[in-house]
Amino acid sequence: MNGPEIVQGTDQQSETGVIAWIDRRLHVVRWFRAEYVDYRMPRNLNGLWNFGAILCVVLILMLATGIFLAMNYTPAAASAFASIEVIERQVPAGWLLRALHMTGASLFMGALYVHLYRGLYYGSYKAPREILWLTGLVLLVMTMVTAFAGYVLPWGQMSYWGADVVGKAVGAIPGIGPGLEHVMEGSDALGDVFVHRFFVLHFVMAFAIVGIVGLHVAALHISGSNNPQGVEPAKPSDTVPFHPYYSSKDMVGLVLFGIVFAALAFLWPDMLSEPANYRPANPLHTPTDIEPEWYFLPFYGILQSVPSKFGGLVASAGAVLVLFAVPWLDPSPVRSARFRPLCRIGLFGLVVAFVLLGLVGRHHAAGAWMIAGRCATLYYFGYFLVLLPFAPRFEKTRSLPSSLS
Image (cartoon, rainbow, N blue to C red; front, side):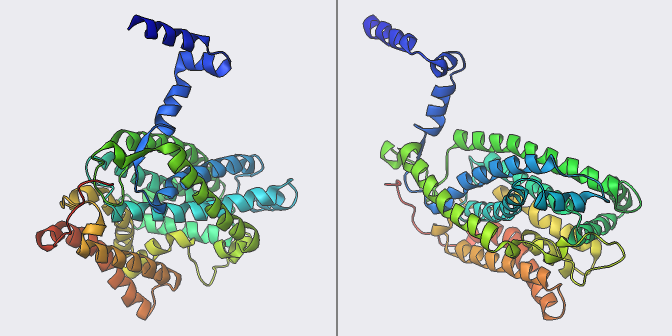
């Protein structure tokens, strides 16, 4: 026994180079190998699991482009729009950096919604992954705040009036609303203080997101990844190492996502931007249609569908907050919706309701759209507060497989 141990120690000490020297003191290489090379993953993960890697890559791109944009941006109401014009027209490759940043923001939110729906469909919020689910929702909220702050910074027409709508909605909160509105805006009118505060908020939140992503990934590696069957691996043949199986699969997903990204950034940039925001903010001219970016439209639709301004604010915020209670609202022992016929139909209806609310927000909840928005809002909350808690009582689930293989 002593002989092999001595040889092994000699082999480890014989490794040379800077990386080996660092690894002997910090165990960086062996940690990376354990967590991202030899780490065991369920063998049946489908393409929806690619979006985690896609989100990480887009986040790095957003941070890199955001830092260079911040170097040339002026956070003041009188010069913010002009500084954006300078970035677009005079800074070398400034137009490219801004195109990547704007496209990345939209596609990051889109990928995040797909990632969230995958968790709902396959029951990734159930034990022992509650912390994984909650940290993911914290990331969702932080990303929404960061995206809204970034939408304000160009200080175009939609930036100004979108901020005005949000400020008035916050001011409608009974009691503390006016105080919160003043803290957010910094003065009696939207101006330099507001732009500067949101610039700082946007910049700080972006790096805070990186920290929560680290916590999210740590929770994933501790609890293990869920899978489409919703069954824990029962034997070694149910799992495969992350590399090369899922590292190569993630690369394929990133290439396909990159093609879509490049097409939207360079060929159809107007699909993800609002033309009115290419005009400087004018407090004396209200746009005909004030609407947020597409990824906020469903919540804007809820806000407009409720007759009370404060009630609409509560409902739109509750649409996100109710997700935090999902692990405890769903008592079913079956994770995946593949084996839950009623919940599978309900989840498809949830997607329809979410898209319909986005259309309601775009059409400003008038006439028939108002009725559709209220029905979609009721269905959205009904799924989480009625269907999930009571479905296990009368739902006939399919038999679960004994193993993944």
